[in-house]
Amino acid sequence: METDSAANSLRSPTGIDHARFLAEDFSPLAYAQQQLASASEGTADDARFTHVLAQLQSQAAALERQAQATVQREQTALLEQIVGVRGVDSALSQAEEHVREIKAYMHTLRARIRVPHAQAAAYARQAGNLQAAAAGVRAVARFTQLARRLRMQMADALREERTADWAAAAQTLGEIARTPLPAGVTLVEREMSAVDGHRVRVQAAGQQLIEEALVRHSAGDAAAGLHVLGALGDLGDSVALRVRRSAAAWAAEVAAHPMAPAAPWSDLAALVDRLLGEGLRVRTLERALAVHDRRRADGASAAVRSLLGDHVLAFWWRAAVAALAARLLAPAVRGTLAAGFPRLARALFPKLEPLVLTRLGGMATDRGAQGDEDPGVAVLWDGLLAPLAAQYVDAAAARMRTAVARCSATPGVMDPRAASAAARCIAAEVHLAAAHVRLGA
Image (cartoon, rainbow, N blue to C red; front, side, top):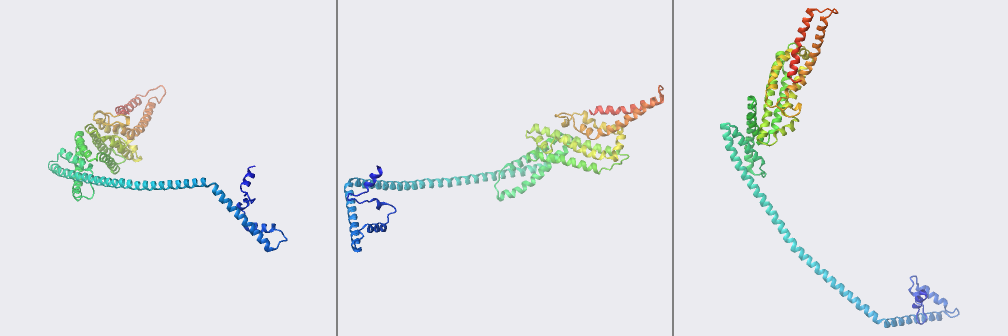
């Protein structure tokens, strides 16, 4: 039904079907040929053409009248649509005008914001530059004051050579090192060369104070020298370097020290004296670090331990005993020392008494906590003396067993002379056990 109504709406009152003209595949030539073919076949060609043309003109005129009637009939609706289109056009024009106004306002607003922002950024940069310049000027002024003070302190220190003057100069050098100075300032560069020279002299003076105090075994004076190095910021590195150099110098001395394999006793006595003397100095250095930590809570001992991997005294004794054991436990010398261990004990153990009995405040790191015992005794026993003692004990035990066996060479009969010899042999070995107990091994 809907299809029939749509077809009827496209048919004119004169009976002309307009649907064919609206088809997408409509061909005027094909339509003309169809009209010519539908004409009477007996009619002449001219008459046929005239008839078809008249029919087409009639259809065109009818179509035009129908279009005019449609326009007249729908005039009001068409006019309303025209008015609506004009309203839409007007609205579009107003919208475009508003968009142009918004764009213009945005440009104005952007200009009002961008220019002040750029000015504010420029002012901020200028203020930052001025602040940096002011900070640089203040730093240079502070540097000149410190350099002037340092010159006076160095003059006093070189004239009087007092520890307090060296410490004051070191404090000033530390302040100079912590002052952020601008680069490229001629005044600073000229003064800095003199400051570097003063630093070298102060550092050497601090190290000299420490060495002189270690010779006197004065932990307090050594702590004053450590304070000089601490003010320079070189305490941890300087102490660790001093201990490493001491251990290396000792190892070189042991390697180059002459020693007769058959009679090493005098040479060994000289080495032991040198070992114990340096050990006491290193122990004084560790005590000085403890004093410095109590006076200046800057963690100097912890810094040195982090560089050495252990306490100063334990590190040095391990390195020193390792170098000595490498020389004395060599096959050429070991047999002589093991066989004469009682002589070695008589010569060495009295020298170790200060380390065992005198409470000078060492660090017993081998046994764990901090205490008054010097770890050198334990390190020396474990690294050098224990292997020699074990070898001698084995030989002594064999000698005592042989002597006891000779007392009863004949079953049930005791030989008095053999028994006396066995008693003397056993008594000769007793001192080893006593020394062993005294060393706490």
